[in-house]
Length: 506
Ligand SMILES: Cc1cc2nc3c(=O)[nH]c(=O)nc-3n(C[C@H](O)[C@H](O)[C@H](O)COP(=O)(O)OP(=O)(O)OC[C@H]3O[C@@H](n4cnc5c(N)ncnc54)[C@H](O)[C@@H]3O)c2cc1C
Image 1: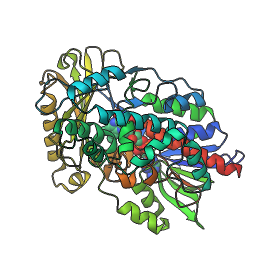
Image 2: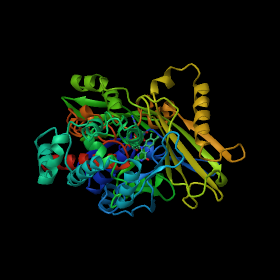
Image 3: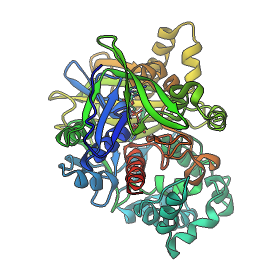
Image 4: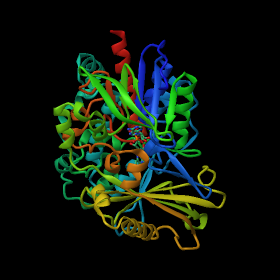
């Protein structure tokens, strides 16, 4: 039985999963002197933010744009803390070009605040009071989040961290805690503005998994504002893999150990405390038990319940089982000749998708396009990645999986052809991923992606905590506050690290 954890260090921590959440937690803990072992069932680290290579193209698997790279942003803070270089990146401006149905001119979500304000005033006359409210809520929420609150709190220390993050300015958010975007639109007399609602649906579903009608207003205020300066969305030079590579570099420098192709099959719990994990080496088939003082799980909350088996607390399991259906993703990866890309094409575009998502109308087709010299395609070529939300169950129940995949691929390419010049002579490579692909490569339950929908009963204060009901067992990743995205899961990792540190100080 291999012994990977060094007994002499501060405390022994096993991290299950090397997604951005798990890697960030592991690297920070190793930096603080913990003995860290991180295990991932996949071939490469990064989970939904990893990459794969085909025929000279490098494709980002899921995440293609990054928030939090600016000074003070969460990735910037963590990379600085770890003493590693901030990855090279370009700002996405516009952050997104959103094409509403039947319109050939996009709504450009500019990074410059003033320019974005002018754009939306032109696009959605009479809506400025609504945007004004969002701006005020964003300012208060952003400052609050920057003070590292613990949400939702589960003990006195958590509560103290939460309370210490509150300032008089935060109080403006309190009356809106139970508001959805739909409520706010109606309050401003914009409830029946179809254009605005379609735009908000398209943009919000990318982050919140649900429509504007259901998205918690406080969550939306941040999701709709992080693309403006001094924040912004960034396109990494090279590929998304650079984030994971840098975190692994820091982890290993500080004595942490990463084992790929190692699956954690079970978490052992004794007397209400997580004590060990059962690991399977996929190459050799060897199975062994590794004990630890803390187990940090970088999995979906649905996977966590499965890993606990009959040790999953009843109430917790019940809550997880009652969660509304989560989304899966269908993604098309195209390697193309550069002539397929119209001149001046922005890095990210959004169209209304014809694919019926699990979340009602206004499903989006979100498109990311590489640019010359960004390291994703050979000279004279480019990558186009288009993703849509889908109902995962459809992909598990179908009797003709390949046929369904083919149908979705054709529909996506046909939709993309309305903007790109996609012909047999310009398409060099095509591949698609479905919920079954995501389940295989990221081990996420039924291939669900993007975390828990940011509805009122599951966002922020009402969501799943990083501190689980089992002592020494922690949850990081997009099932927890503040939700999906590499920036979001980095916050959740930071919270867990602070919670573990605080326990050690007791
Ligand atoms: C199509 C798509 C587009 C997206 N676009 C963006 C975007 O542009 N920007 C953005 O910021 N975010 C985006 N996201 C969301 C973002 O990718 C995720 O929220 C984030 O990467 C999730 O990170 P995580 O750490 O929670 O977990 P994951 O990425 O799910 O990683 C979990 C890791 O754990 C491993 N694992 C799981 N179970 C086990 C086990 N039992 N044993 C061992 N290993 C295990 C998996 O192999 C995986 O590597 C997108 C997601 C998708 C699917």
